[in-house]
Image: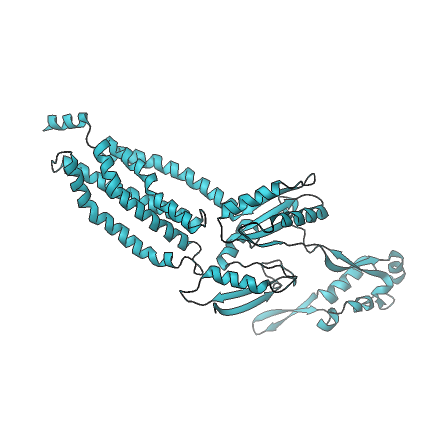
Length: 441
């Protein structure tokens, strides 16, 4: 009931960016443009359908998630565990052990080890004596096989103004019959020679690809995270992998969304600390009452209480969208606090109101409407995104909206209730500032 269209891609185009073979396929599923469609339910339904087909390794990812994961790890899943080492067979064995250890872990879905070994192939063992007797060189045989099965461009023709390569190769019916390989004729100075006369054809197995990262060989184990926090799931996976005894020279490395999230969080903390220092310096210069600077800075962490609670209720962890929401709430809360405290300074210094509880209450009442309007307009704008949290394409905007809404709730209450109380207790003009004002008067 969720699906609008489906298309399938098998293998890759000749000049495609994906280095896949015909053993891999993608189904591009477009969901209906319906607000009632729950993306998580649709993904679970697709997983149940795919689970009915034995022998398949499958994963369900969104288009955006696919692109983000590929840019982080080269894989399409959220998390990739790379097993590094020199011996490929040993890496395969370790990968199977890691996959078995992670099976059944809460939050892990689409767990798979994409083994590249066991790819069927034909090996040509050339007979040097037979080649010499036929007047052939090794390159002659290789060129003939290349031309007949992979094709060789021999010229160009034109379709209108478009140049089209002319490629020479065997018909598809002959290329798809491996038993005919031995009868492939090789042109020699003494006439055509069958391939079986100069080479021994042996069926064997090899690897489809040998992946490298930083000059080291590795194999990948991938999985997605469903129904649980990303970082908590990865921590459990790391703990289970750490209990395995790996061969000498073999080690595991986690990469993907969790590592990127940790790096982003560390960067955010660094930039936030730098921003707080700059904000403090600007406020210290701008405010006439020195205590107001500290009141703004103390108010900011408390204003994020609602955002943290919203993130915890979502159960999705500190995603990119959630971090953007935290920064947004940080700015809105700082703005409201600055406007309220600056209004207190205006009431006392410009209008001549005494600094007491009545002035604090009056200032809060006069700033009530602007602060509520700011929160209300922002909340109304983000409400549709929050309601569509689990809709397709809302991987970033949904968590951001929920985070901002939770933060607006707590920051508005704190700015209107807690901050005035703190301002009355710790704010106001200092005795020295009051005396200078009286002298000036």
